[in-house]
Image 1 (cartoon, rainbow, N blue to C red):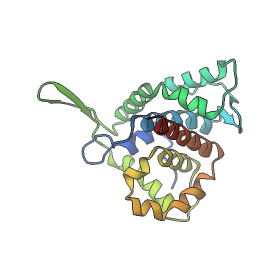
Image 2 (cartoon, rainbow, N blue to C red; image 1 turned 90 degrees about the vertical axis):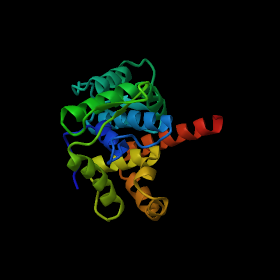
Image 3 (cartoon, rainbow, N blue to C red; image 1 turned 30 degrees about the horizontal axis):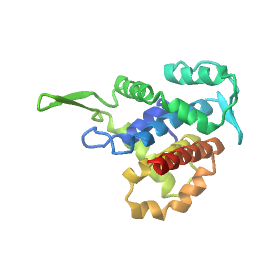
Image 4 (cartoon, one colour; image 1 turned 45 degrees about the vertical axis):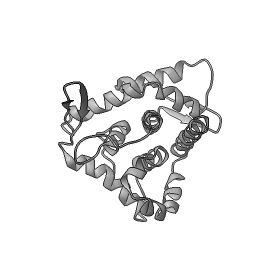
Length: 217
């Protein structure tokens, strides 16, 4: 099943992070959310042919703007760097923009009428913000595409490989599937991850960072 070409990778990640029923976000460690979004930006640049990588470095192959403020800012930062750095460095560096990425992705979904913003007050003190899904077909399509990739032998689209890599590395899949089902498709996940070198490398970088954080806690 082909991906929704109108949505950015960060926007699709945000849809995966939203609960269907009330528009609240799934519970993920803060660093997992941040790195899933930074990974989404880097994968967007790779998908659009702006960056590539090898074992030791991530580099710009085309510095033409994509017309997306945060994506373009990250591209400009990579292009202007006086030193070469690997993917892990740029995952961590881009994660510093996580809130900016999150807000830009949510605003994109709101402007398309896919989600709406609802402010609520609890005891007149605490404000929470929900993003109920308005156009459920788009949100369900994103999740259904991942499930189709996991539970069939169909060849996934490049976008779906990217989403699977990010969703697996950040723990989003743990929120979509029960542990038993997730364990049953472990081999399939491993196979699909290998279909995209940079996606696999970004996912590995996210895992390495999360392990480092967990060990230092």
